[in-house]
Amino acid sequence: MLKSGELVRDTHTIVRHLGSGAFGDVYLSRHRYMGLQAMKVFGFTEGTEALEEAYLLAKLGHPNIVRMFEANDFERSGVRYGYFTMEYVEGGTLLGYFSDEALELNQRINLGRGIISGLAFAHLQTPPVIHRDISPSNILLSREQGQVTAKISDFGLAKHLDSASLVASAAGKYVYMAPESFLGIHSPATDVYAAAIVLFELLTGRHPFEFVLSATATPKEVAEIVKKSRSQAVPDATATNPQLSGCWNDFFRAALKHDYEQRPKDGNALLILFDEIEDSARSAVRPVANTTSEAREMVEKAHKLSQQTDTLDEAIGLLEEACAADSTVRERYLDLLLLWKRGIVL
Image (cartoon, rainbow, N blue to C red; front, top):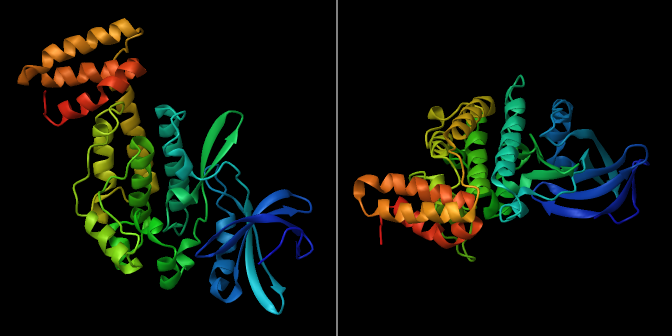
């Protein structure tokens, strides 16, 4: 709707269109005095309640939440529109980083902690601010001074989507929804579940639940398929990423409980659990081999140990250590390690 160079309320100059969603269009704008900002524009009647809530959202000042600056309205060709201006984060969304091999495990864990920290801050407000639409596309990454920081965007705005708009936003939203969300139930624990799925993908590169979506499936069919997948057992994160300590399996089993009353109740509870797991993971790390020859010696010893059922666990531990120590060993033996973890010894 808005073109490059257009002026909004004599203060914002449109630079370019950034994207579209169920809740309007997003533009890069230049504020006369404050520089580049992101501007979300939507039909005024569909966003009246959101505009009224902008004051509360503007107070969510946290390094892991995209900051909102202003909410207002304007008129174009006799039609009234509402808009928000927010912090502009130019590093892209988290979705583009899942397959980034340059992003090391400790960086992924730090990004995960940032996401949970932002949730915790919002959930501790009075009343708690619930996102309702946590997904990789709503998590932006800022790169400053060599550091990558996760920032949750659209905080508090998702609840203003009507059911038709939510359906129109396609399957990308459904795959992160908690079981109770399909029943219209929303709480901080709902955000916990969605964030846990995002973290599982971030640390393992795959979604925790298996389902197949047809390109021709209707939104209703997509919702039903994804909803059924939530009854599956939570898989071990270590089965996909052997670099993770086994205590991360406990983290995901707790955060992805089907019953929301059994999950960490909010982002703060999840952050406490996350820190406990991270501390346990650090203490569980054994000294890692420094050379390729040491890693290969571990592989040979692991092979011998794997021949006996009662020493298979020790073999798995050694092979995990060798894979962590040497990328060549990891590339060659990762599939074998995954077989061993399933109890299959060739």
